[in-house]
Length: 296
Image (cartoon, rainbow, N blue to C red; front, side, top):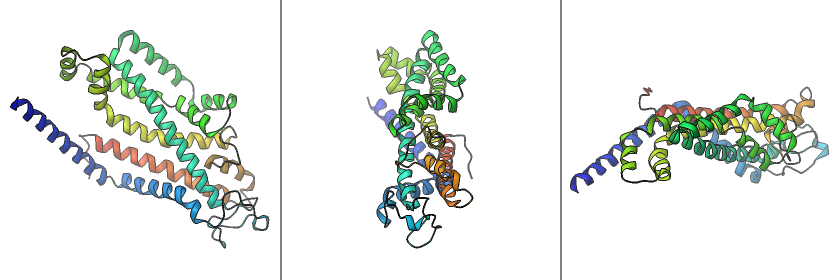
């Protein structure tokens, strides 16, 4: 009994040490910390920003049409209808970030379950599930996304579902590969001998050991989901006005590139900053969770 307690205590100590090392490696990753700061500022401004501005996103001031940035009360200027571009940008950020995070959660859940089942059972079940995954990967994601968006109602909820339905394959392949490498380990064999069910082994023994790659893939999926939403909305198949998103703001700005370039520059910079930030964070997590990583 004493030996078992000591072994668990040593295992817990080793786990805490590994977590501490992971956090330190992440903190030393300058680009990752830059990404955290940038995405925190973007999120803060999207949540709080509209309350700090004198005008809301729907107020129309015809006399102030095409006001340049930093003029009067308009931080980022106004659009063709005299609406405050900053208010629209921050509200659009709420929508775009919400769609990105929600699509990431749903696609990660789907991919994790499929990859877990395929990697654990292998043989016929695993082969069928992986061939299903490969068949989805055969179609260009953008075209598949546009096809689904053209036949469904283009609102935030449906766009989230469509992006999630076309983004789970990479997570499934990552999880399946990790589970296949773990299922023959001693701790899995011991769980089987002790009479543990397949569900217990998959979700309590194997899944916790794949959290690292899943987190990295999920972080990168947020960036891709934000970019996909912007792309679809830019083409007119995504979120529709008057509800703003960074993508449909770019769509509306096309015809004013010569006379009011800030209408495209402002949402374009927001998309670039958000996507780059999540990519930086994903790279930092990947390096931090890799024990072999030798970061300065």
